[in-house]
Image (cartoon, rainbow, N blue to C red; front, side):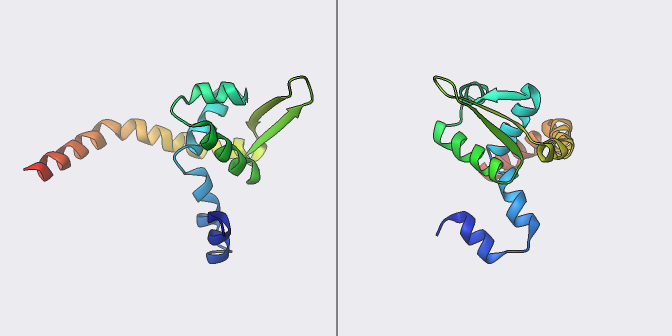
Length: 125
């Protein structure tokens, strides 16, 4: 049984656990933010924009976001085949909320880092 099946079986009617878990993982936020900035990207271009993500993890993240209808994947039957990703209408409706979270993070980043450093200094003493 995979992680998705376990979550769905354990919390079938919980939108927070079933949806938020997909959009708040480490890579999904970066993928969504990148697609918001560039509108349409091919896989390799998206991979270049997020240099520390593995190809396997990017593929998995894109699949989850597509399964939830947050991004759209379009395949062009060319030689070689071309695949493009973009935010869906649902994904676009999500972005103001994520942008607010990003703004909050920027606004509080310095203080948060100071608090982290204070905690690590206190722990070492």
